[in-house]
Image (tube, rainbow, N blue to C red; front, side):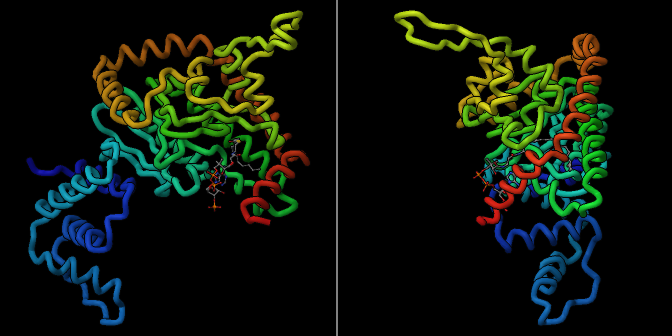
Length: 376
Ligand SMILES: CCCCCCCCCCC/C=C/C(=O)SCCNC(=O)CCNC(=O)[C@H](O)C(C)(C)COP(=O)(O)OP(=O)(O)OC[C@H]1O[C@@H](n2cnc3c(N)ncnc32)[C@H](O)[C@@H]1OP(=O)(O)O
């Protein structure tokens, strides 16, 4: 079967998620096949001998002679597929041909088997979220709400799911613009969380590793949360001089209920007091293991890390074959009961956080993080 344009675009995205660098020889082959598939035979002038990189690229492209565009496309797809198999990619990478791709490689959106997958792709920064990524996730969710997929998935590439807001978002703000930035940050946050509240189809988090901050709080707005047993869930808001967002001030206490804390000697007299579990996370910054998060209702199911990707995707592929309209309508029946409330909570949390960002506690915490990073 000939590779379609859609297969070709899938392969281009799959390349971005390769876990191993395929090496220069293979990269040149990919480049040459890409150029031949998109522009046809090489008829641009040969670069000078000292322009080593461009000359190597030109040579690789030129060597393909008059190979037809369709064959080049097929060869490109085959080559990427063999690389992905040997690089243990999850094999979920297929963009919708008509989808507007995000503004950077930090987010990869793919579509296959009725599942649109949004992958955070900044593994060297533990998938910390930049303003561009917030915008791109919103665009991706909007596109996924209209495409022909039955469900949408958010996951991370690399060893982390997401380390939350990129704390360098707070740097390089000119002195007179702090209030303005906090205001626009709060608008961005509110719009971002609104997209999760309003997303009309089943939304699944595939938590492939530790999760921090907003990537944890948002989980309360997902329909399913699958986690590897390597995942942890951490909301260090007080440590950062900040406060909860993502509607977690409502969803977490609702799902977690109270916990009992026992003081004193169990054999003799003891005092029992009750602190909501959510408070331990959101106020005291207690980090939960995947199993604890599952017991608390934040995670739907925990899988062994060694079989996580395989088991989760088999499950999701089966779910994606269910009648999509029925799934959408059922989700909306559930969500509509609380939608207004969730939007109001989101607005309130965003405005409180806007104030927090201007506090000394928050500024000091950010400076602390940046100093440690700079090894001062
Ligand atoms: C006024 C401006 C408004 C801005 C707009 C805001 C819009 C919405 C805001 C929503 C509110 C969200 C709140 C949150 O999410 S709070 C949580 C914030 N996150 C954190 O506190 C985590 C910070 N990171 C860490 O603690 C550690 O890095 C971590 C435990 C995640 C991993 O530790 P490890 O030792 O394994 O790895 P490294 O620390 O060496 O990390 C590797 C590199 O990645 C960088 N990194 C990781 N996380 C972040 C991050 N959140 N922000 C920025 N950079 C991050 C880390 O610095 C390393 O980079 P280098 O290799 O360059 O040193």
